[in-house]
Image (cartoon, rainbow, N blue to C red; front, side, top):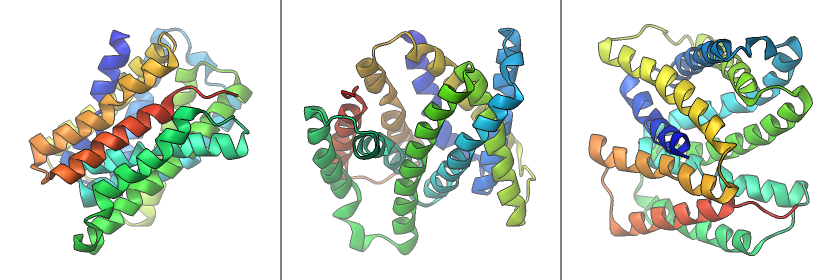
Amino acid sequence: MTGLIIGAIIISFSSVMVKLADVPPDVAGFYRLVGGGLGMMVILWKMGKLKQLTAHVWKWAFLGAFFFAWDFVFWHRSIDLVGPGLSTMLANFQVIVLATVSVLFLKEKVSRTFLVAIPMALIGLYLMVGVQWTSFTPDYRLGVIFGLLAALAYALYLLSLKYSLSKAGADPLAMAAGVALLTGLLLGALAMAQSNSFAIPNTKSLLALTALALICHATGWYLITRGIQLVDTSLVGLILLLQPTLSFVWDLLFFGKPTNPVELTGVALALLAIYLGSLKREK
C-alpha cells in the first residue's frame, strides 16, 4: 500500500511540471510519454520482461494510445487555461464517466453508491465552475470544457486498455510502456503538424520535462501498477484521490490560485463523488 500512496503523490505533480515546462501542450506530452515509455522499458528490462513487447502487444497498444493521446491533448490545454488544480480535478471526473458507460453499455447493475455519486458530482461541478460561469473569460471557459473532454477521453482510454489487456495477454506494465511510446509519437506528430518547436527553452524547462517523464510518469505509474494488485478496490479509489487533491493544493501553494468557500465546497463534493464512483460495482 505504501508504494501506491507514494505513486499517487508523485503523479499529483504531473500538472505542475507541465505548467513549469513552458512548452506547447503537445510537445510536453511528447517528451513526457516518450521519456516515460522508455523509462518503463528500462524497468521491464530489469525485470526480465522486455520480450513481452511483442508485435501483438504493440497492435493492441495502439488502440489505447489513440484515446490516451486525446486525453493529453485536452488535459494539457486545460492546464494552460485554468491551472493545474482545476484541470486535474475535472479530468478525474473520468471515474463518473467510466461508471456511466459501464452501466449503459456494459450492463453493470446500478449500485446505491453510484446513484449518490452522479448528482453529487454534478452539484460539485456546478459549485466549482457553474456558479461563476458568467464571470469567467472565454479562455477560462474553454479550459473547463477541455478538462471535461479530457475526462471523457481518459475514460475511453481505460476501457480500451482493459479490453486490449484481455486480448494481448501481456504484463500490464508492458502494455503501459507500449501505449506511452505510441501516444508520445502521436502527440509528436500533432505538434509537428502545428509547426510547434521541440526546443527546450531553458534549464527549468528541461528539469520539469525530465521529472515529468521519468519521475511522474514512469516511476509514479510503475508504483501504482504494482500497488493496485495488492490493495482492495475501494481503498485504491480512496488513495488515488490524492492525485486531484494534491494537484489542487499545489496550485494554491505554487501558483497562488484564487479560490473561495463555494469553490472549495464544490471540490470537496466532487472528490467524494469521484471516490464513490470508483467503488467496485456489481456486474
